[in-house]
Length: 141
Image 1 (cartoon, rainbow, N blue to C red):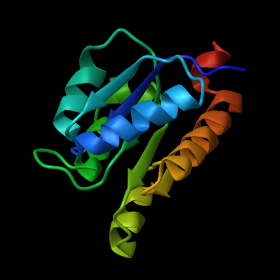
Image 2: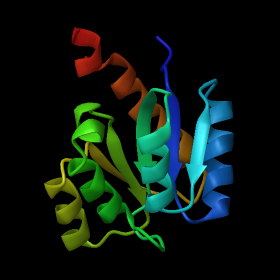
Image 3: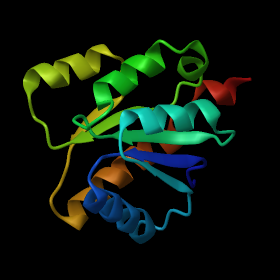
Image 4: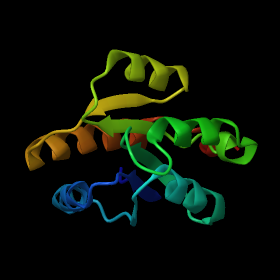
């Protein structure tokens, strides 16, 4: 089964955007990808889009609004929270306290960034496979 909806990637590193775009193409996904450079851009997109978002894959440390602030804002927005969009951190930060804080905000996963394309593809495929097969609240109505 193919995933449906937008892949929302939130990262301030343009090289990471390029790596993720290549990983999406090499994995054979045809989903529309939206790239945001910080949490505020992602929050604005989530609040204004009419498109279904399949997953949010966010870095932790970014300027303007970091990933933790983005997740807090989603949790505090009843409309966004009710959409139950999978939120996964994809970060090079391995700080145990930040990871614990991230999980306290009801994230669905935390993946370490890979420096190689193969590692990024592997992580992306694990995430997509899981969330494609997972029963989602929107599927229950």
